[in-house]
Length: 621
Image 1 (cartoon, rainbow, N blue to C red):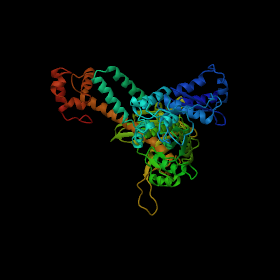
Image 2: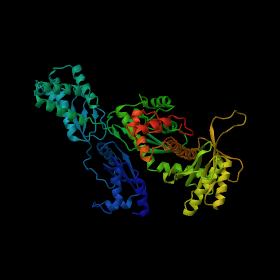
Image 3: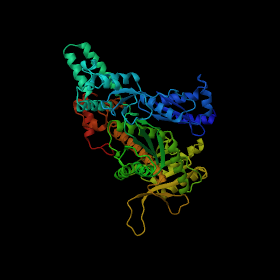
Image 4: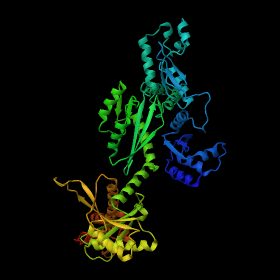
């Protein structure tokens, strides 16, 4: 395998989840050549790139043809098993085993097309239109156990159609209370249909009838000291619950569904379509959208284009959030299908879990970097064009100054690389040479210190953003001249908020961003909804947050010094003990004399209380 391809795929696999799921290998034509399931997707897929030969004959051929890899996360291994089976049958991958007998997973059929329905095991690939089929189930043992429980607790017939027609007296099943004996007319059609309805509800997961009945029977046996019988009922309950375990991949046996998941970040939106047809989940398909709309608005616009006239309309459309045109979409889909259709955004139980699964995989696709890289590249290229920069700003740093009336003047620097924060590049500065409140001089000092250090270490960004207008920018440019910064290497711009005013209208309330260039002239105005404006605002807000946090920390330490360091007899150890006990200066001030006496000597406690009761100057009062 080509080393560059291997490294690229390993970077993608590093973002895969560590839970269960299904992975697919693709060739140069984007065709699926192998499908596999895993308990740990990341570890399993990574092993293909770390092992030269794992002993399987096809392994080296698979590595030679491999060009891409994708995955679908599931909530448990049973879901992964069902989805793997579905994808193998759909794509017929070259390197997967083909089942020549074409067997599928076990299902339970309720023969409602017959006069006296019965429940039986079947293996079908396509839904039979005559009866009702439930499943598939991943555990053959559990489904057979379930069928035995149905026969034991629901008195349906178990005989064949021939036996039903030819019997003249009830069989032993009727004597044991397990059959209503419709063969000899011992029950009415209404009574039998009621039992069929109960079985149908049970197989659909609505087990409110059977489970309480078994629990009551188990309790009755236990109270009567019939522990062996109670144990058998307990085992029956466990078997039924195993069979009815949430199998969201194939639970809705008789309804077709379109399930949508949604994930968004930094101007990139991923909508994932998860089709469920005849109870079988299909292959999910992601759609990557480049938009400045909010996620719900993007989904609304997407659905209008997705359901084109030739698109199949299912029974249900499940959405992760409510959209503006939901009622209109419902009306259109009902007209197109000609029967009842439901479009739901408020979901419960299995439907909600299906949407969560789709959203989980949409977020996974976003995290693997496919959509994010596209959005980031578009944003950075847009910055280069709109700000008239010499190069794409792969590395951006932003400076902000924070002070209160000239006290505790500090500054911050944050760094973004490839559109994402790089905390290792964050720095905070105490302004050393500026007296009083002079934000412009403070900006000049910290920019000079940063650039001087960057030139010495060979660590300079592509773009420096100064939080402020043209005056702050000019002082930063003076600092750049002092240290001999090459303008071809690093460019500087100023960033300031402003309300835009349109001709003939009152002043707009929208906050625009103005960019000041080094050469002066009219500021460049960025629209609030643009990706470039959102990115710069994010960078500036991070710098502002960092500066404010550092400023507050200095003020807190100063308040503690002014409050405790001047108290006679309170040294570093006692200050630390007091802060550990009371948490803050406010807590020490509010503590009683007895509480203070638990930490320091009584006489010193009186001194502390008296000292802190005096009016304090600065931030300590």
